[in-house]
Amino acid sequence: MSSTKRCYYETLEVERSATGDILKSAYRKMAMRFHPDKNPGDHTAEIKFKEINEAYDVLKDDQKRAAYDRFGHAAFENGMGAAAGARTGAQSPFGDFAGGFGDVFEDIFGQMMGGMGARAKRSNRGQDLRYNLDITLEEAFNGRAAEIHVPTAVACETCSGSGAEPGHSAEMCPTCAGHGKVRATQGFFTIERTCSSCRGSGKIIRHPCKTCKGAGLVQKERTLNVDVPPGVEEGTRIRLSGEGAAGVNGGPPGDLYIFLSVAEHPIFQRDGHDLHCRAPVSFVMASLGGSIEVPTLDGGRATVKIPEGTQPGRQFRLKAKGMPVLRSAQRGDLYVELAVETPVKLTRRQKELLREFEAESQTGTHPEAEGFLARLKEFWNGCDKP
Image (cartoon, rainbow, N blue to C red; front, top):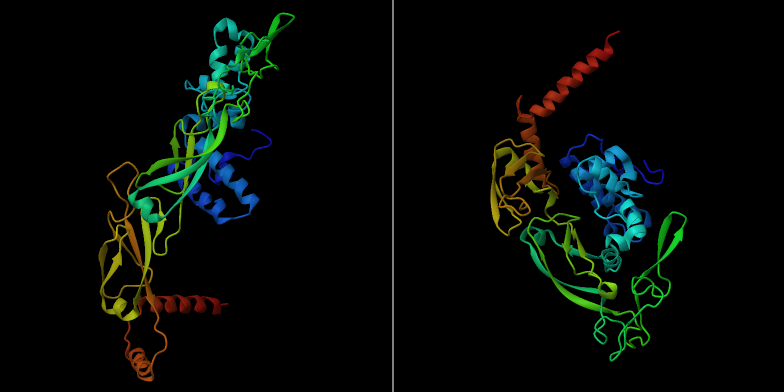
């Protein structure tokens, strides 16, 4: 295990034997607790939120989790990711590792193996971007088409991304002959280093573009349309491939990751695919029975029949009235919990009626209270014995 990183299982506060559902539930609760939007200005909560996301990203994937269980954090450091993947018969959990063994051999034998072009292309890839999108619980239920504005680096229109002033073009670097790297022989080894003259691009710009100062990129706000599917949860990540920052020197663009944050609802509380709500009723209705109407998140109404003698806290399950399951026709359930309300500001006559009711109450009218008193009597009798 890495000495500078906390165990992923401890971060999510779960056992090593935790199932996928347990991991997901633990992640959801902790992500909501430490989300930056709920802890504005709290740097510690922000760090904790990042650690939680990192831990869950590894443990939710069977291959990554297997590598982590065997090698700890070293499975994803110093090239161990590729080695662990080979031992488990799978690909490296995170694909290409910068600084991994493959990169070392490519640095030494890149030209002979024809790998230099591919490596240069990877190194010129644009940055991945993150966008935080706030949605309501109704939008998480129904889905949403959102228009977002993302500031990012795009190819300069003046020079078409070349970095050179119109009418001029970039020239081949004389130091590295356009390869972007220079070689030096040390004993039996040939070492490659990034060319200091062109900084690895293989080209020299004698007449830089005045708009982008030779960078080939400019900052611009882009407008994108995002489809949020029904059933998304807190922390759901949507990836837009190729919508990140533009690459340098013709490199491919990065990706845009949209992280969703679902606002709290005044009536419903979400638990996975299920919804919960609390409905107050009078003690008369709870005693005599009746029915109430409760709202559903799709804008409809549902009738809940209350049997005679219903006790506080009883839950009624309404099947398929909860959240939709992502990319599925199924839906969770809605649980309605009854809260029996004690009346206030009673008139003198109402108080007299209640006292008459209490005086005329027979055995069995309050079974829970009577059972509790019987247990108390038995307990006290036991305490009185020597």
